[in-house]
Length: 306
Image (tube, one colour):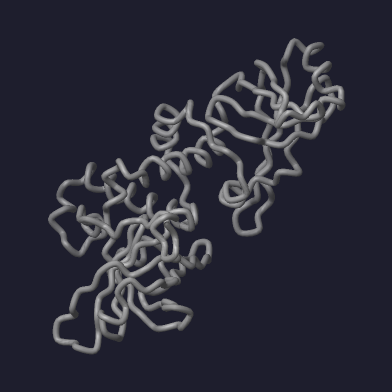
């Protein structure tokens, strides 16, 4: 991902500082957090812990109540340092830093007498790396919600947007009911895409499909599952049809959403700072359209579901 500016870091902190991110399996992958390298330092000793959730102001960790950590926190007047460790980009060394914290309380976790969830308030503003990492996730989550205008924005695939998105190619494949077929991306959004494919609309409408989209920097492939919701004719080509596809909401990778959000954020920033760019229809800044996007499909709307 591209480095963030000081203004973006400040915006993330002011806007999302109290919002929590739950560290489930997908968030661990997205952030690159090396969970086994995370620990608390208190009274000169390192104590293993597991990050359960974090905001830009605090972190909640799971610890063993039998380790002696709770007693050490009391002796240290609830002061400690938490060590964060993230994977380095492109095989670089891990990103490691300590943040001073203060324990504000704990509760038994999951009814267990052996595990407690400890809330740790940051003693100072979190490092930029942590703000940027969590801020991207929080910003993407907000902008992809059903109440957000950005949810309905499509990105037209042109040579310029392809470059800016780090899209490998607009030529890709879609698996329709398990059969792979070649297609061309016409536009993409948080929750859907429009593709051009050979075939007849009557035989494709309402069919389940899995669309492959490949990105670079870093190289990643996403397989987006959903179904075709509507079709459009392709001028001058009776053998081709444009199909609008809605992705299954709970199967959309967070990394894919972050890429879409990052692009739209960049385009909006260009438009705000240089209005003249809007007049140039070849520029990436005007390749985001405020038009109804393909709707995300919830689990209950899938074939065979009530």
